[in-house]
Length: 131
Image 1: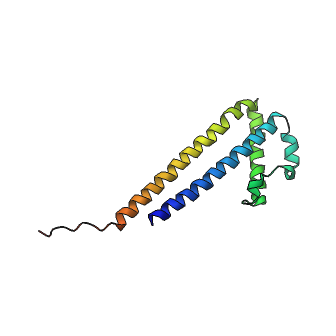
Image 2 (image 1 turned 180 degrees about the vertical axis):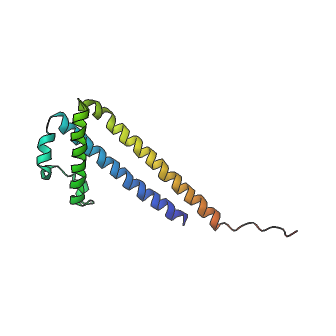
Image 3 (image 1 turned 45 degrees about the vertical axis):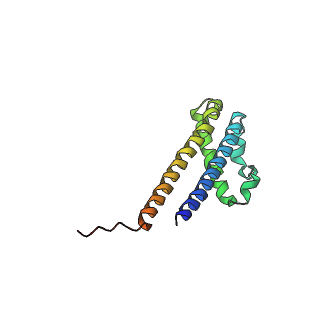
């Protein structure tokens, strides 16, 4: 049972890592497009957005398109708020990976707690001497 906890932990961390890697890749691409002034063109033609080859095997393309549209809306909002995308490009990747680290620590703490609780439950309790 304890091994199952750690298998689930590894699966969740792998999913979490893939999600953060995808978000980082899409954000860098969108920010580069924003820096070159292509954001307006991208909003008009979402079908031309590149889908990473490795991602097409695992994720529904309709879901990905909705995520891309949401990301594009965020980038368009940021173009109005921030005068330059260069400042954002410098800290978005470290921020995403910091969030990944915090999420991974949270998952590890949950797995360790489940491991400990299973150990308490599966260990036979001490019996009193009856005196």
